[in-house]
Image (cartoon, rainbow over all chains, first blue to last red; front, side, top):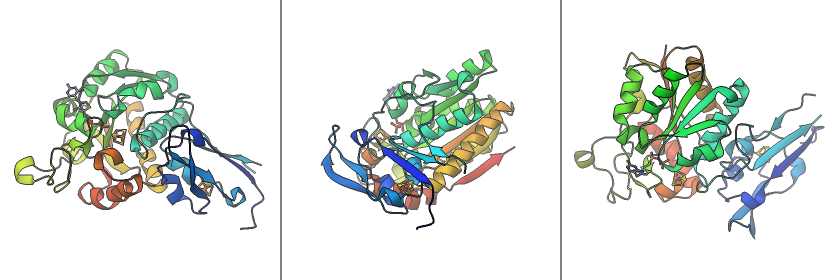
Length: 75
Length: 245
Ligand SMILES: Cc1ncc(C[n+]2csc(CCOP(=O)(O)OP(=O)(O)O)c2C)c(N)n1
Ligand code: SF4
Ligand code: SF4
């Protein structure tokens, strides 16, 4: 996966995540994981690891029932 | 290079909803909001919310939304659309709302071919009241009121609303989708968009049923629920377009 020249920014509102994991199972790059930490709602929340592997496919955005994931693509 | 982005649609308010983790309502709210943004009809859309978990939809959508008594959104939408025919009017209803207490309203609204769009969320249970049997509960499915599973001899058969309505002359568009994975979400979005186009073209009554997840009512975790919907629910409720005229 070295062909990527674009820059992506993925923002997850972790404090409102309810930890349903629907994004985790749908990420083809397997870079979303459920944290061991607890957020202010009392849920374990989703975190992104190795953000540089994100292809901005948008699957996590499509799946999130709480619309907490936003993806920006520059250039 | 083109700049693409995935951001929350403008037709959703900047608030957080109170649905359970993994509930399908949030996804369906978002695809409707995206369509309204894309068609640029936010200023002339009026939604009718149901009784059920989506009762607070007016707190989540950023366009005009009213609320109807249990099962009556098609009747309320009929009134709104007849008085304001230039508005885009749609109802958003659960299976308990549309297929149980509201059966008379939905059948007659379709039969009169009211020029409204109905989004029918089928999660097989009464979610808000803790997961009782709904008309769409599958045979053998355990719910709060069918602890040993739904029995056809006692409880009848699940109701196939889209198939049933598609035999009426008044129904101009009837289709079923689901929101369990990204591919099906995209397909369902295009079905809902098509239904809105029917209304914009003054064709008459359109309905899209969406198979959805209610992890709390089904007593499964969100991933098990999504798999159950894909494997079990689609066996009885096939996806597709039943009528498009
Ligand atoms: C006239 C009337 N009868 C009964 C109720 C109780 N009640 C509230 S929500 C609901 C069922 C909703 O189920 P459904 O339409 O499937 O929506 P969901 O909660 O699953 O999204 C019922 C029976 C009510 N509010 N009003
Ligand atoms: S955009 Fe695609 S690759 Fe990136 S985190 Fe989301 S699902 Fe994974
Ligand atoms: S009870 Fe079911 S339908 Fe209601 S918010 Fe929870 S998961 Fe969604």
